[in-house]
Every structure is written in structure tokens, then in C-alpha cells.
Image 1 (spheres, rainbow, N blue to C red):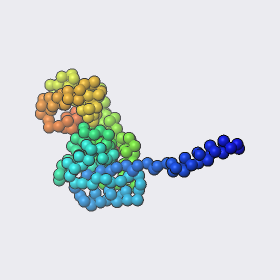
Image 2 (cartoon, rainbow, N blue to C red):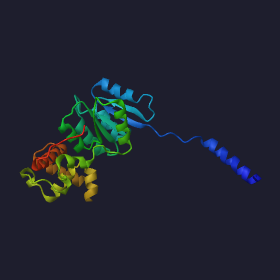
Image 3 (tube, one colour):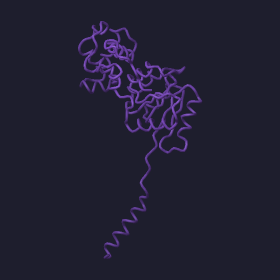
Length: 247
């Protein structure tokens, strides 16, 4: 080896030593929203000693959790369904409107099909029963943190046996909607946020909000989750399909 090659090799080794080993992946930042302190403590304990995830926000307050999501301080939110301070399904819907980057895992004691159904419509990435093993919960959280959706939009189609984005079911309640409103309602039923609907239809997000408000007024419903659930149930009734969710 010539002197120049030797010098280059020495310089390369010095650079490698200065840089050190590759940095480890940053842990997934977790939020847990549950009104039972023992559940929050249990979720935190799951990640003790596990460098892949870290609970950075643990609260029973919906406003605190929502602020953390708005400020983009978390990657995955683990949310209870029924809380004294609010409804977990509605929290997921509101949080996705404000920051669709954050994935949501519904962690609940309830096995009702309707709860799963509404979680899917609201845009949750996964649905877990609290009695699942720690390893199963950790695995699901890491999967959704990497962008996987374990509740896919297509699962709503499978549950109703009718692809809602190919047209709404014939239903007298929905007859009052215009063609554009029907299209928007069909996208709502797929769990799309206002921002996602606006991008898909090449409209302003404010325009979609106006359409959504008009739809609620016409149908006499309180929120978009109620509209989406009604559409899916109407499709299921029309086809005689049974909702069978894999919980």
C-alpha cells in the first residue's frame, strides 16, 4: 500500500470514529387517553425498558390530549371509548381533522360490533380489547406507528357487503341530498377527513365544511360520524349483510 492510500485509510478511520455508530431510531411517542389511572399506568408499564416506544402524554382530559396532537408532540394515540370526560370515537374524529399524521388505536373493554364500526368510520387505525396480551398491544402500536392501518377503509365495505364509495344506497332519508352532497357523504362513510375529501375532489377545505354542515342540517343529524354510520347500516340492511368485526 502506497503512502497516499495509507493516509486516505487513516483519514477514513478518523472520520468513522468521529461520527460514531449509527444513531438508534427514535422511540415512538405515545399518548394514552383513559379516565382510569390504572389503565394509564398499565400502558406506561408496557413500554418500560422498551426503547421502541415512550409514553410522553398520559391523561384523562380530552382537551389536554387534543392539544398534544395539535402541537404534533405524539405519533400514536391510545384512546379509550367511554370516558367520563368525553367520547373516544369523537375524539379520534376531531383529532384526525386537526392532525391526520397521528395514528389512533382504540383500546376498550367493549366488544360490540357498533363500537368497532364507529371506530372504523372515525378513522382509527386499530381496535383492541383491553384483555389482549401486552405483546399483542405493543405489536399493534408499532405497526400503526409505521403507517399500517389495521382497520382499513375497505373493511367498512366488507362489513356492509357494499362499496359505499361507488354510490349511496337507495334510501328515502338520503333522497334530499344533491349529487355533490351524496358524493361527499359517501367519502365521509369511508372515514375521510374534510381535508382528505377536499384534496380528492379538488375543492377548498372550507367548501367541504360548508357542504358537511348543509348535510347535517338536511338529515337532522348531529355529526359526520352519525351520518357515516347511518349510510353503512342502510347499506347493510339493503343487502341483508351482517356486521362481523374481527376483534
